[in-house]
Image 1 (cartoon, rainbow, N blue to C red):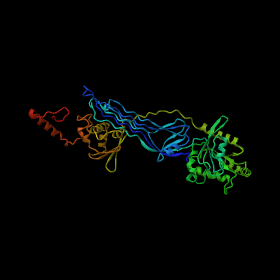
Image 2: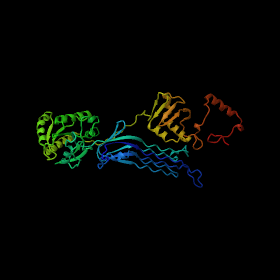
Image 3: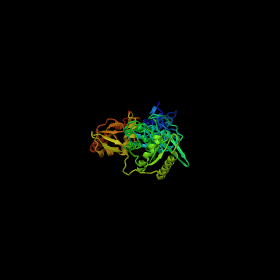
Image 4: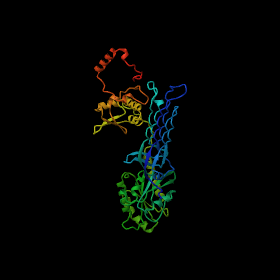
Length: 483
């Protein structure tokens, strides 16, 4: 059974916002009670937080689909819907969040680090919130905004100060079990270690962590063995220690060749050339191993490498090795600049920033992109003409109509906003705040004859004035013919 997972693909769905409510207050002796539809609640967001008690991404391996709670819809009597609960996922320290195409969204290091990866949708406003001095009883409400939906890749990169690298069965697990309290699996066959092991070393007033990376073999950086899966765990290490088996019986193996092979794999993986190196010639408790260590030591020192002859079985040389690790770790920490307090940078919008862009497509259509117009379209109920007219007014006030004209759009051209497509008809969008009509209807969306010229309108007005009063049919206040 899988017990360690360091890479998963999460399918995230933030909560949708609740719909606003359309309601008119009804009470005895109050025939015109006014609108009282409540607002919808906001959808829950999905966030990641670093928890020191979590060490693997195993939970997400079995449950990759994550969905936050939706907001609830509003109700009459000015009752707002409840907000959806935010979903907080606990991840281990060192988790890297990236998109499926490799774009890094967040590198989460440090307990308590939080990142909102998917934001919940806004709740729609009810008709009580949409009412104003001219639109006293709106016959529509806003829909809830859909929550963000995306796939992200979580990769765990162990946060360790020292990384132990070497061939399988070189003694890395035995070494980390002796210098720390870690208890990795130890056996006399290759690839005993299938997952990275972390151990905390305490030496005098020094404390640092050591990572035992599964054995590397030639071609590990291209996918052979287990190396490609776990080379990422040495990226954060400040010091690398080559653990070399001086008592191996495999033909063609010797300490110099082993180190050259591992260095070639590290160079091909990239990004590790600047890390200081130490060499631990392990298993010197075996007579042949001690003899080989004494032979190769001068050659390794000629490469400016600090060499230590150690034995995990008898603990020979481990004290000197751990002190050397602590020294290099302290040097790395001293050279690393201290984290500065977070500064909030305020960048005001440019005076000519309309908040949206219009792009002319190759097929002759136009695409409007922007946070506000896209959200407005998603929150519009297109089965309600009054809501469509309200959307037209908002887009006109934002300047979308004007910019479409400047971009060369003609009546009848296809315009895309969010997931909707429209046949653009500028004559329908007068930009008026309110046009009288029956609740839920907008007279501008009804079929009308082509607008007459100014001269024709003037002539018709004069002819109307000259008609007898009894021939003129009375009209109602809303512009419709009276019955």
